[in-house]
Length: 547
Image (cartoon, rainbow, N blue to C red; front, side):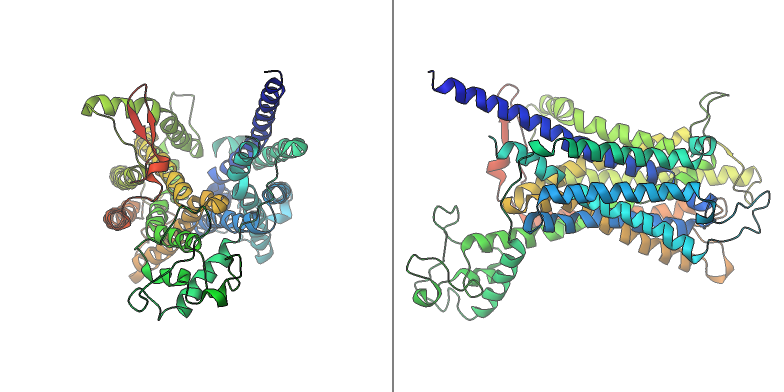
């Protein structure tokens, strides 16, 4: 007994240290998210008012910036898992992120960094010079690189600590304050992260999945003539204590990679592979299949992210509506987006604690909240989000025309902006449920050696969604402005047809829903369903299964 007590105490101390280390990682990631949200909230107004950009150009810059911020974490995850390591990757991202936000803040301080003000007239504004736009994009690029470094490994690095142990205000206060606060957030986050450097558990493992993936592809091609039909006593090469005895039947063309054609030629005396480009293990084949199988379902997240990429246009719509709560208090246009955050965070907290038990009582049996079900619910709510936005904009535009202000987008329409809380509610709930479902799905279906990459696939779908949104925005703008007509996405919201634009995206979301049903059916049960399902004996609720 006396020998076990020190060990028990040691484990408690290790777990305590793990929590302390993880809290610093979470703080750093949270400050980065807060800084990014603070910058993006009013960025469209900053580009229009200070850089004199039109709506389409400003929106393109924002969506491309968002796409880069969500793509670079995937690249960073590959580097963190394979060569660099998770701690150095997050440290690099923190430093670059601070530099980017400080330089972006300097664009609000240095007059030469942006074009001169328009003055009283908005018809003869000086446009931005090439240098000013390039410098602005450079600063945004640095913030994207910083986000890529921090987001790429924060989730997996936090888990390592236990695995191994075991607007409007900006118009009043100034853009300097509005962009200075995110810079301070990034600084606080970096200080928090580096303050616990000595406490972090740094994994020595390095994933070689990229190499392994190409080995499987090449080996399967080399062995393409050797199949179960040509070999009578077929033998697959498997690792000792492997959970896989034979490869699965899906994507069978990859099974050729682990067929043992000549044991003496490709294996040594201990049974280990000598030529990994001609013979692979069953585990390698199944890991490669796991990645290929999730791609169709991952694409549904890309299309759903198109709806979330409309933030800049939504702010312009909010600016034209009455934002007064009382006669003396007016909600800033960008601040209305806080309802998205409120509903998203509330959904994450209340889903398992309130909704699932309630649903179980209604149906009289345990309600199985699966990752694929969550993804489907999110896509459904994205359809409703765009449809409701279209209805609200149709009503708002009609009121503007009846008021006789179609040619003056600066005049506030006699319609409360609080109507936009409903679509913010829908997309907040949908985004939260879909995001949780995607994280559960990818993290459970991917090889454990790719945990950092699995945790960033959601960001990659947002990045892809931003690119698709940019493409759609430009195509719709060019097509609808033909013949001298006002574009649907005109900078003058009263002359444009944002409602038609929203309906086009809603239609795309409907197609995405049908595509998701098809992909979900084709995917079948998840390989890790049994491992992921967690039963709560006290309330009879099961959740976490993929299938």
